Image (cartoon, rainbow, N blue to C red):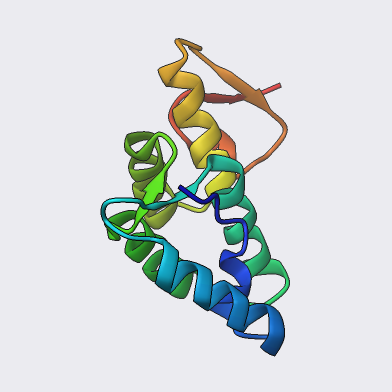
Length: 129
């Protein structure tokens, strides 16, 4: 199994050399029997980079996330938490990282996540400091 922090290059196709290498790794080495691994941090970083550096719309990012979560050639760390965070992100105003953090915290038996983030406080389990 390969860990895939190269997803930005695979999706953005912005650097010919790196993008070509990312395509080769993902298309040839990620299979149903031996999927590529995407951890929570890489998933959050992917969303952040697509939003902030590439200006992808939320609708586009939602479509990208859904494809990644459904792809059998990829194994997402704690996929159930990722799906829950995805649904929260899709429906709300908070960023994906906050949605995943809140979901992970609830699964870890944290009753409340305290924050200064005004968008995040609208999520279940968050409150303002």
